[in-house]
Amino acid sequence: MSKWTKNPPKKVRLNLFGEADANCHPLIFSNQQIEDAAFQHFRVTGFPYVKLTPHESMLEINYLTGLSTTELRHTSVAYKVAETYHPHRRHACANGFRSPFDSFQNDKLLRHAIQLELKSGAITPHLHYLGLVTGTQACWNFRPGFALSQYRKYCKPGLTVLDTSTGYGGRLVGFIASGFAGKYIGIDPSTLTHCGNLKMASELGYSNAVELHNLPAEDVRPSDLPPCDFAFTSPPYFSKEHYSEEETQSWKRYKSGESWRVGFLLPMFRLQFAVLKPASISIVNIADAKVEGQIYPLVDWAVDAAGKAGFSFIKREEFPMARRIGTGGHLSDKVATEAILVFQKPKSAGRKV
Image (cartoon, rainbow, N blue to C red; front, side, top):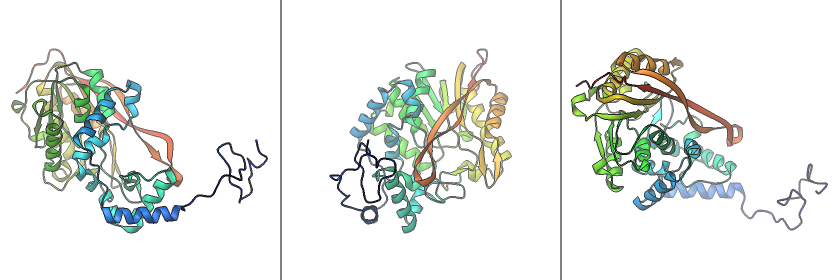
């Protein structure tokens, strides 16, 4: 190894082996030139929405099905499938933050996102770091890979699945990838989200296996739904995320944590309990939420509400989130997790209509 390896002279470039190399030529374009070119590109082309074709979505889902259980826990494969049908996700934001779309309109923030991408090694076509610049926080989608792992763990072919908060289609993509060919019943009050999931089901050939209700979960009557074998959802975290400005949104309907707990969370569990068959499993992804400086114990509230609805609490598992951003814009090794709560309807309980 060269004597320059640990402390090379400033003007000496190192080759791949860490040695001073006279043949290692300087880069042609500076980061500033690349940043300027990228900035001009995005200003001309506009916001970088994800737009997969149906055949690209099908290929993504096929690839997802080949991953192992361990790989499914962390993969982002097929995330872009759901993104394709929900461009409005990039217009939504967490309480008190800007949306990625709004940050894109700001020249300084757009350049900051490009700089972070450069530090990470490449400028992605859809500017992943745009949702991470100062003052920006998007509403996240559920990763289809983790959803698939849960379907494989708790479901059998031909079962009917209930999702009381479909959101941006991550669990629907996971259902399609499961290949169980049963039925997915989804409920969501957002008009854009409802239309996006309908279009996804249609273009991917799953219209006959998907039944969607464009209503708040607390407004759906058990008699409107068929008997279900499995419930799997991730409800809104009180008012932490603002998915849309429609009055049917739970953050619009319920101004306090307690009113949300009584008006949304408990009715959601009661709906699940009413339509699930005896001995069926319900799993819920939820986390405590910090809203305007106050911590709301949503995990404890969910366990309590499920118990009041009639469920037995089985266990808590962990849902690994994306790696966090560290100093300098680099991904750190820390992985945040959220709760996956597993409940079961007693064998002796019948269907309530």
